[in-house]
Length: 94
Image 1: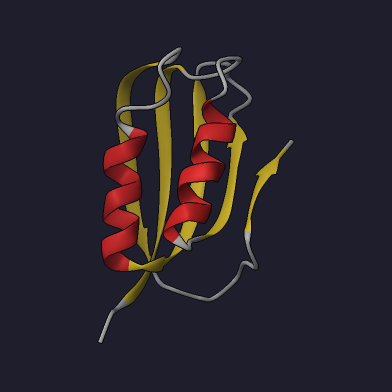
Image 2 (image 1 turned 180 degrees about the vertical axis):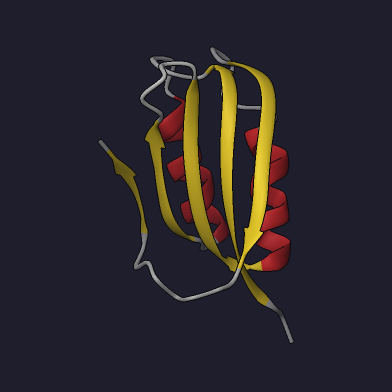
C-alpha cells in the first residue's frame, strides 16, 4: 500500500523565464501528482505544491533540483505537509 503525502517546495536560482514551470508541470503530470507551480513574487524562485504518492513526491523533489537545461538551481527548500486531496490535476498558476 502506497502512502499519500503533500509537499510544499521553493526552488531558488535562475528558475524564472527559463521554462521551469512547464518542466515541473510535465514531470508532475507524468508522476500522477496533483497541485500547482507558480513564480514567486521575488523573481528568483518558483513555488511548488504537490500531493500524491510519497515515492512519486520524492522523485519530484529530486527532479526539481535538476531543472530544465536552461535553468540553474541554487537551492531547494521543502516541507512535508498533511495530505488533504486538495487539488485536481497539476496546473501552472499565474
